[in-house]
Length: 216
Image (tube, rainbow, N blue to C red; front, side, top):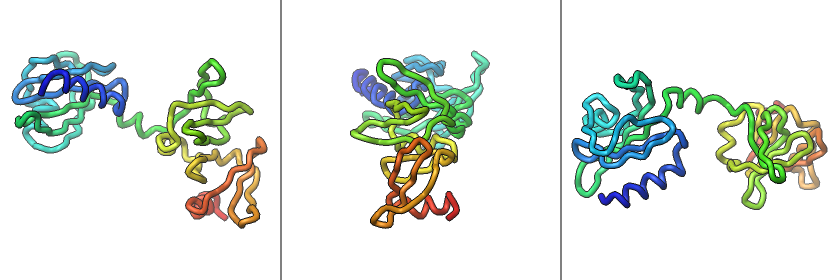
């Protein structure tokens, strides 16, 4: 595969994997492409694929692998994911290298959200966030009577927030301690009134979840 194509693949993957990750592609017995992130892959173009490395093990088992590896030269452990691929008719491996604590960090809920307020960015503890809204292709979160614009989508945030956050609509996630009361509108759909006065609709698709989580 031409170098320019490999570089394009690395660029595209860089939009989907964490910024600290490194990417390496091996074809045959050596690496043909490397893109360094914060977490070094400790390989360079032209290096031979070591037998016990993520790439070497992926070659051997011919399936996707997740491996925690200790690098003997640097003494640093890292988390690697290997994908068997075929490039220009040859067997190859795509390797993504991440920090050793990557899985643990992925399981921990967010402790703060950073949002844009006018011309500044501010980190806000999630405990201060009353609710999050998706509106006009942007994500907004509300805290202490301010509206902040976030770079994250509502969908990506849903699985990263503490369990006090409850999705109530495809456009809203609410922080339960900020709910003041639950009522019904003229169509008998549930409506949440928050302590800051915001009134949020509960869509029918989320009604069962809301009733289960709030116990009524």
